[in-house]
Each structure stands twice: as C-alpha cells, then as structure tokens.
Length: 257
Image (cartoon, rainbow, N blue to C red; front, side, top):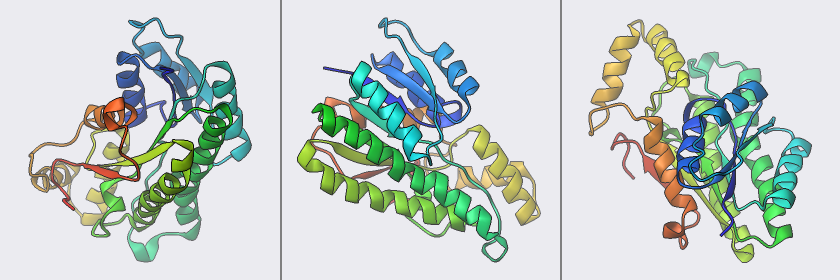
C-alpha cells in the first residue's frame, strides 16, 4: 500500500508531532509549512527507520495554485494517499474588540485553507485513482461556542467540522475518506501565547489560567501533541477504513458530545 502523506503547518507544534508519529509508523511524509526553513527542521527530526525519503515543501494553504502544485507533484512522483490539513492560527480578544481584518485572517487560514488544500488533495487522489484519506484539524472549539475570547477561532473551527462532513459525503464516490480531529488544551507554542493572552484579558497570571484549564479537563492534565498525532495516525490507517465524516474529540473529557 502506498503510504505518502502531506501534513500542512508541520513546521512546529501539533503538525510537527503528527509528521513525526506518521514517519515512525512507516509513512513517507511531505512536511509543508509557509516557513520552508521550519519545514526542513521538522524533516530533520523524522525517523529514517523505514528508509523513507521524507521531504519538505513551502505552502501557503490559502493559495490554490500552490496547494495544487504540492498535491499534484506528490501524486505524480510518489502517489498521494493521505493529506492532513493542520495549519492554523489563533488570536485572543473579546468579541466586541475583534477587528474585522483579524477575523478574516483567521477564517482564511483555518477554514479557507482546509477547503483549498482539501480540494487540491482530493483532485489529485481522484485523478490518480487513489482511494485516499484526508484529516482536518478542527478543535474542541469547533463543537461548542462556550470558549472565551476566541469567537473568530470558534467560527473557523465550526466551519471545519461542517466542511469535513460535506467533503466526506461528496468524496465517498471516489473512495476518499475525510475526518477531523478536535483537540482540547494542547501544550504547544500556540498554547503558550494563548495562556499569556487569556491571563491578560482575565487580569490574572498564565499559571492560574493553566491550572484552570487542567481543572476543566477530567483526565487532569494538559493535552500533549502526541495525543492528537496518534489519533490522526489511526484515522489514516486501515483500522479506520469504514469511518468518514467524523469529528473525533481528543480533549481528556473537557468537552463531551
């Protein structure tokens, strides 16, 4: 079975860990990021146990021409069997204070990027006759609006969950499965920024906010990127071959649906 996957936003954080876990499990990983140097740094961390020639690629996920170039290039050279749309941003501010340009930027990367890349990947898979799998990174904030200071992010991630279902429905005829993952409080550089932002907005300390997040999680710890990456690996595996259109919660019980 062909095992080549493109992971977007994989220059750091969850994306880097997804790339690492997939490489450990025998995937040839094409690490993409808007920052090519960061993507190359991730490639340098990937396992070579399976002798797979991992690659890096520069990709602005909002650019359909760039996305098609990556997807078609990988499909024609290596065979594209999976795509993980993980690239995303966050920004914290009270709803009444969110500037429109920030809202538009969040939706462009978090939602338009998933649409653009999903379309490029699915077209490449359908053209080459590969019944592949696509995984989109949504969020716990894509299932509930009770998330402070992240209205633009919530809107984008609700959109990802809905788009995942629409993609799954239409792409089933090509044998392409589409699912999403919904992480909770993941310990990443992005989370460190959010801790500082939320502490300032609440008039408290990052340590207090962190403790509040832990107390909000029944499993009583912050999530690690590996917790997300292992579920992504499952969704790309044969074990999930009859799953499509799902939004899997990976949040330690912080939100249950």
